Amino acid sequence: MAAVIDTDVAIIGAGPVGLFAVFECGMLRMKSVVIDALEAVGGQCTALYPEKPIYDIPAHPAVSAADLIGNLEQQIAPFSPVFLLGRRVETLVREDDGLVLGTSAGETIRCKAVIIAAGAGAFGPNRPPLDGLAGYEAGGGVRYMVSRREEMRGKRVVIAGGGDSAVDWALSLKDVAARVTVVHRRPKFRAAPETAAQLDAAAARGEIDMAIPYQLHGLKGDGATLEAVTIATLKGEERDIPADHLLAFFGLSMELGPIADWGLGLDRHHIAVEPATCATNVDGVFAVGDIATYPGKLKLILQGFSEAAMAAHAIHPRVFPGEALHFEYSTSKGVPGS
Image (cartoon, rainbow, N blue to C red):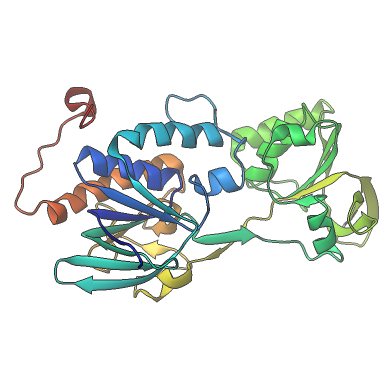
């Protein structure tokens, strides 16, 4: 018989913002159930770049994505959240005393409120349109993430893309790879200005090769083991770069899945919310993190953390109707149960 779980708040998404929402709810004495389609907590941090350094977390000059998730898990442990991993939330139904969610694994979750912290939604890499791509993906020559930096030690690495992931990994791998070549179709990168400047400086020192303006054109090898990446200019001028690995960072394809059918106010794969509470147009449903949008929104983890706190405080009256919430700093109240 499928499980029926009663909780105060159901949190969809176990990335960093979803995990911090557990903490903020817990500080207000609200119990949480966390549901995620991935088999492990951490969202994109765990699935796509566990060793990638993150520089904009307050009090951490640099922290790896894996360490950030580990710290968040430790922070929420006192609240004993229930994790339902490897399944999706399929249905949302309103009842007189709250909301009822149904998962793809058959569980029923009864709650007073829902926080959607699903990041980019269900995601997968945008793949370059290259002949024979699947074979080289299977052989490990073409990748869309780096699980361990050491996997690239002594390897010839071609990185394609112009965003933060491409620039960050070029800087991270230049000290372990035999050679790093960055392929981009124009000189300007979409990365953070500081890291883009670091890339330029590393290229000037000869630590990174820059193939600009080029784009991917083909793959060479035996169909499974990569030997070279063919690149071409817009004029059709081609050249081959010897390579053991191609890291293609062209962003993620986003899909909201069943959430898209819940009647939420959608804005190009994002959910519109009230900035002060992160409430959606569906009563009792809130959205935080990258999936939430409003005027002035910044796609930063730290802003998602702030949104988690605002959503938790807005939910409190639903869980404890008629009870006044007197705000206290964590330094004075501590962690409940500690």
